[in-house]
Image (cartoon, rainbow, N blue to C red):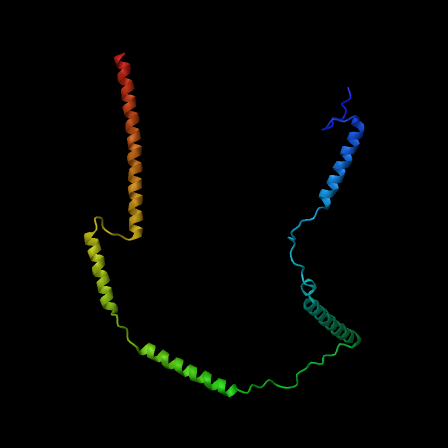
Length: 196
């Protein structure tokens, strides 16, 4: 069954009422879309001198003009080189002369003399520490360490040889222990067989 239009108010013709309601709704929608605020909330208009930065454009044009001029100079130089026979025209016919060579040489000589004098003073200076006294103190400390220590101190080579001897002795003991254990097991088996 077809569902007909149900108006909000009683009407004689539902079809005409539907047309009128749709027209009113479209008119309302257009009014809402065209509505403007009573308070202006937009920002201020940006000045023209801030929108178009003329100084920046001028600097960019000057830079491009400089690049173009340099390129033209380089291209003209390259054309001259290509058209020429390849001769070299940059020979320097003069010797390099410095105006303060003598002063630098005198300064260098003075510095070397001061260095030699400092070296002589260092070499001639005697040490405040007596090597014999230091060696005697070291030997005394070594004797005290050996006296205080629980085990005697030996050189490393002697310690390693001692360790090897100890390790070999433990291996012999373990081998003899295994053989005695196997002999004990054989005796136990013999005793059990005789008892049966």
